[in-house]
Length: 116
Length: 110
Image (cartoon, rainbow over all chains, first blue to last red; front, top):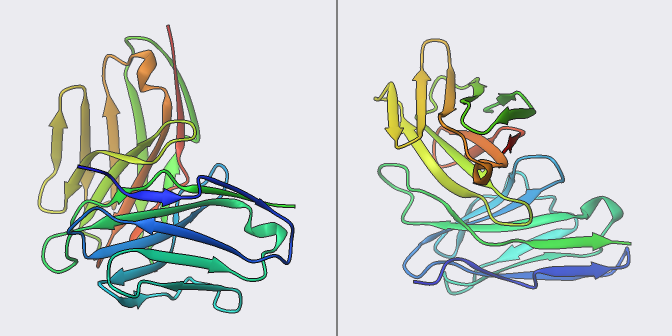
């Protein structure tokens, strides 16, 4: 079974440019997460989806960040415009349905963004 | 919101020694405590987890203990091996929101 897939793995852009990251969760996983991981830090939640609904986006900087999960499967995270401080690894994770006992989150390999 | 503190930030041991990493959390409603291992440039992977109705859980060389009264939990690795070298993150969750610690870089020297 394939794990969580993310692309691209690396992205280098100049500041003020837009950038988008794509995530394909594990088949059958209804819950999808986007995390930001700064160097030497733990992942920080940006947004959580239950199917196509964003149920927790309180940590998403909505002035420049946006996300979508139109059909409840793949998801895209966008930054426009990118700033120097956005350089980090963006991790996608998925888990089974959120209701009931907590379910393990499976992480993708991440996209390492460098903003010059 | 939940706050998770993790110590130490770095830990160096000799192969065969034990390693202990400690975390504290703030939200008394938290009920799930996973530990993730992240090798350099790779994805975090779950190595063990514990739920609030259990005080201790063991899986081969890895064990986790939970003290809900004191709001702290610990990861214990026995008979460490060089391949245990990685960054370890603890996490805590209330309702479906994982909050991670800042990580412990474990270095196991042969």
